[in-house]
Length: 272
Image (spheres, helix red, strand yellow):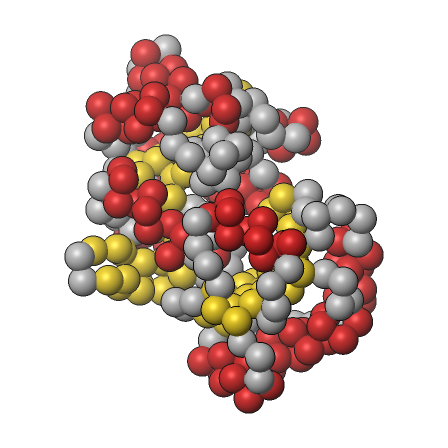
């Protein structure tokens, strides 16, 4: 029997406009299975979705950088993994100096911080409905690094430079970070401990769940570890072909209410 669903957001629960369809909302409400969102997004970007779905369980932000519960009093963090502060400071300066054409921003526990307003920042703001805080001084950046940076984000709307940047960063052989593409135009850097499978296993431990009692929905490369961790992995129809091999079945695309279709198929055909 399925007791818990782990759910990616962008490309999975959300359609191409960044919205949740009425059919997806209805399927979640009617089946009343506890849901943990497992997203690369920040808690503030996830909050409207959590509120709309009235989710009461642990949620996962920054690909596992933070496990938390959202309630009327704010965000209660159960676990967090930030980029080592010396590495985050070095990377922000290094990327800014060597790839000034790339949109560079980062996330602390509570804020999205940008160095300047550019097309990448405007794209992210439109996608998430959030506005960044613009930080201009080196001292302020240093203090943010000391307090903890959960994610560094690079956006290249031309999609031409990210592979080169990823290769260059990997050649630095920095310890304690993970680098991945969340979208074709977005490269994200987090702590090496901010992994979806690690977070899912932690929530399963918190909730005393067995593997066979869990389902996951995902569409991207950063979802693969989560899909391999649960008992019943479901991959979206819009996922790349080499991600689809990790699904027990392939549901419809995110723009065709694939989450609702998948939940109903699991309930009616697989009867679990």
